[in-house]
Image (cartoon, rainbow, N blue to C red; front, side, top):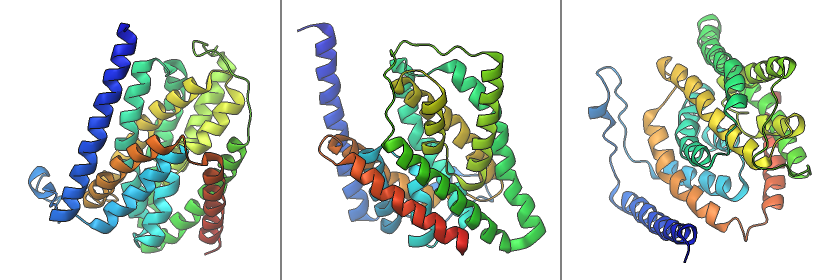
Length: 309
């Protein structure tokens, strides 16, 4: 057996053990009512009262399962669940969702970086625009709260509605979009005009993500597919790697402004990690295109409801 084949077999065996271990830990946590010791880990003044919440963990499990099955961004799926199912206020849902997304995407970004499927030049120019845009978007919520008080939640809800309308349309478009296959080793020539357009694209997406937590995956990926002629695998890797930088910057700003519930994030992660793993293993037998279409229609209707509310 060749070294490559042997390493591949060892990886699959290790992954099976990891799946089993994560599943067992999740079941033990549900059974025993695990307490998350945030109180001891955080500085004084950042008390969270964090405890294991089966409802939040179950929501994370279901969202993680759908992310693994469809490849859709967790932001587009998690925010509606937090707001409409778990009754989390929009500003807190946005901030917590961003921190959750940064953590979950970091694992995928690391794997893509190791596999060489990240275009660092494209990532750099996207982040040049998106990180400032995300910081501005996240900070604008605090400015609006200072001007309008708690009624800012209505504006955030409408912004989320607009984001969902855009994202659902892009998901449907991308689902049925066919594109020519490029070599994985293909490199993108970054001309001066393309660099400027990439920075502007990054800033626009970053601003939207900073306000709504939505758009770092599905929306950006559709634009990349249409206007950046490199391999799809390389675009996916670049999109995920860039999303970590974007969501981490926006999430950190929301955390400083008090828009992040660490207890909520920890419970969502506890459920979503095994959900993503299980969904990824079932993707070969699931009707991916049908699932993506149904979810996109649901997101469109959700966005319409938010916009008209």
